[in-house]
Image (cartoon, rainbow, N blue to C red; front, side, top):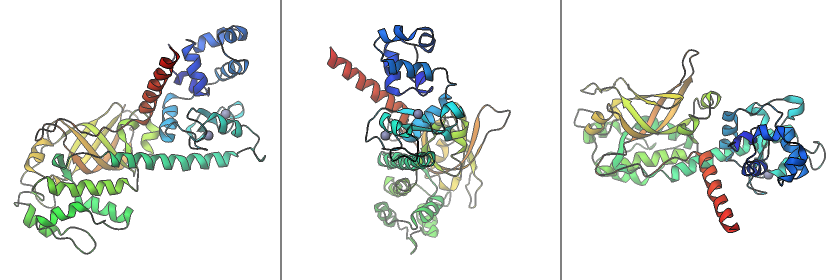
Amino acid sequence: MAKIIDFVNYGVPLELAERAKRLNLTKAKIQAFRRPELMQMGLSEEDVKCLKDCLVRVPIPDETVYLLLGNSNSTCCVCKGQKGQTYIIHHIKPYATSQDNKYENLIVLCPSCHDIAHHPSGLTLGISAKNLRKRKADWENEVALANSHRAAAQFKITSLGVDYANITRLEQACRGLLGEIPALSGAKNLRNFGVRFHADGTMNIDDILERLSNGRFLFNFPGSASSLYWIELVEQLGSVVPFHDINAADTAGVTALHSLSGQFAFYTGFCQGERVPEPIRWPSDPINVSAELDNVVINFAVDPLYLLSATAISRIRERNRYAVYFWIRSVDTEPAMTKTTISAIPLLIAAPAGFNGFSNIPWIPTNEYERHMMDRESRKKDDDNELL
Ligand SMILES: [Zn+2]
Ligand SMILES: [Zn+2]
């Protein structure tokens, strides 16, 4: 059976693609059947014309479609979903003259805004290519920020599970992006352990060395209360910059991955690290902790100084399931290699499993596209049930 994306990637409106799919139509059948035959199946003359016209095109690559839908939350970039939930992938420079299926020439629109986009621009009703590109960029930024807000809101990793917090990087990122290190409730817990803060909000490293360390490593885990602060700092960052979902980006293709260089991201899944040389001294050399996805290898440069406990030091070298919040230093795809390599600076690493009885991460990042399609499937089932 044809997948919906098989029609959507030819520029067929989603709503029509779904109807065609329900009629068990495939590309081959639509091309083979004559127009009256298709109309007898319940399609309008307009539907048939649209299908016939679209299916002679070169399809938009799947990865481009997923990227467009993911970055727009499958929602019209012009009205932001106010005029309807269904969508169509529109060519900003018309396909007939451009045959341009590149990401930059495509935009997700609802049928109503799509009609407007096909009015010649310059008329009151039309909308220019330049304007469409601007609307797309604006909406994609809004979606990215909303996604990161949601990720931050859903960030429920228990403070008992935090294994690593690069406090220096977290402080730097907060000062750069928030302009300051915000006053957070978790700081009180650290003060209770005897850690003082400078006027600019940064922690006094000497206090950490004296109070939280036994001289073996920088932070000796004094209890879950101290970890709350690291989580709060990441949440604060997540409220002003998007944290990209690497598990979703893994399927979005090389171009999408390369656009993430210099951005923040998160990953959940297995990691395996090198052995930490002990004793840990300051300054220390970072060890590599890597995660392997379908199309991506992430190399996390983990500074052993910021591992929060002896347990964390031994756990990091095993293969464990982790949630990692990080900054992407570079993205490389070697010509001979099948996978893209991401070099990353982790800000926070949380160990979800097998730790004081916690069985899993309570938070699972959503792949927007999959979530959308699942919602859609369940809505459709509801509709079908109503018909019975
Ligand atoms: Zn719209
Ligand atoms: Zn169009």
